Length: 248
Image 1: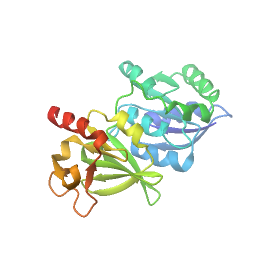
Image 2: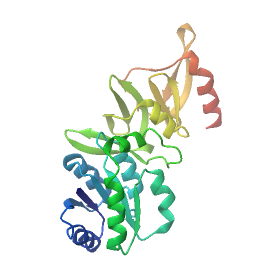
Image 3: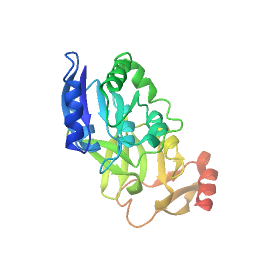
């Protein structure tokens, strides 16, 4: 079983490596000191299991696990943390184990044995059910074989683009693998669907404008849509857009 260790404390990583390497059937394939490194290494190493700390700089372990669970070949995630209070969030993020620090070998091996019984197909199926999970603070784009984390607060809109979704944000635009349906479900409090292929951030909407032929379009704050196609609102979604704008 190939294992990726993720913890911002070198001594904690050393302790986990020592416990893992006591077993001939377990192998450490990499170490990461934060969530972004974990996502990058997971993409290249495709570990079977990620041993993941929760409190880390940048994106925390909970959000890292959410990104891992939505990958094409999701690893099993076992949280290794000193904090009991994150247990519910951990399992909402589809963790298969939760081991408290200081990590004891018996507890770790029991969690790894449980992970070994769960195949990748079962792990991938979990991503279809995000009930109870906290919304992510970032979406993840792949740019020239590297991962780019885009803060949700900087996203202006999501727009379907063939097999992908285009994210227009404060610093440009990128393609992501997430579906519009899942994005709408996860970020329903911050985005509104304006037609079947676009979700727009309520915080970035300046006004709803009438245009010829009885149609309507979104005017964005600042110059966030310069050079892009106008954001038309379909008749089907017009009433809901008006309602959300009145309440925002």
